[in-house]
Amino acid sequence: MKCKINNSIGEVVGDLEVQDSLFSVGMREDLVHQVVVAQHSNLRQGTVGTKNRAAVAGGGRKPFRQKGTGNARQGTIRAPHMRGGGVAFGGVNLKVHDKKVLSKMKVLAIKCLLSEKTRREEVRIVEKIDFSEPKTKNMVQVINSLKIEGSLLIATESLSKDVILSARNIPRVKTIPVALLNAYDLARYKYLMLTVDTVRYMEKLWGEG
Image (cartoon, rainbow, N blue to C red; front, side):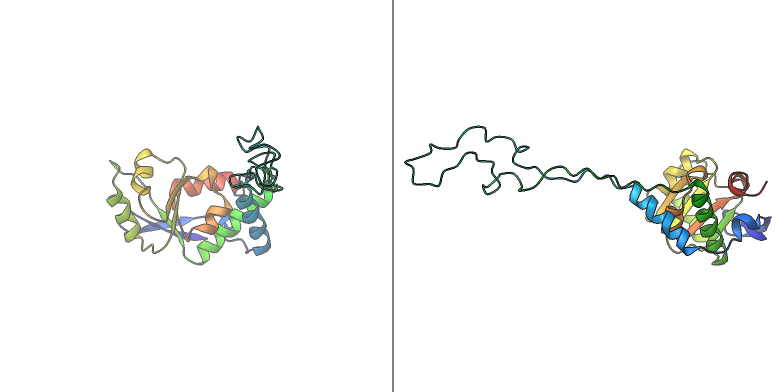
């Protein structure tokens, strides 16, 4: 199949022949959902917890004598019923949220989302993304010229510092090396911007031959 190539001012300058095995794959919502949920789960830290009476600082001695004060007897100021005390049945709850997904499933999920975005005309292929200096204004002009209205993921073979700095202050825009492209980011961002070199590199990574 063929995709249009745009320049930095939004003009169509040619067509790019791309592999159907990468940009024309049937959608597998069940597989994409499984991969995206797994990647999202792997981002979780799993170190949530509270301090029980053993973990709260202080309370090493009896707060007052056992008898004669008129108060109920107390052994520590860090008991759960005391102000500033530990949490009853608390403690650090170390959970492992890692979910394993086969590499072939990850690649197929990427292909499904790339193909779906291509069908929806949400993929923008440009000749190159190159700025002489890091300017947010330059990146905004490129985005506007390509008629991108919504969140944007920019994936290139090798991100230059100028591209990263030009895009980082723009809301809902993320830059990523194509080698780190994943189903979670593809599902999260509406539009995808690629260069011609990036497409060829993707075909080497995930295409046929």
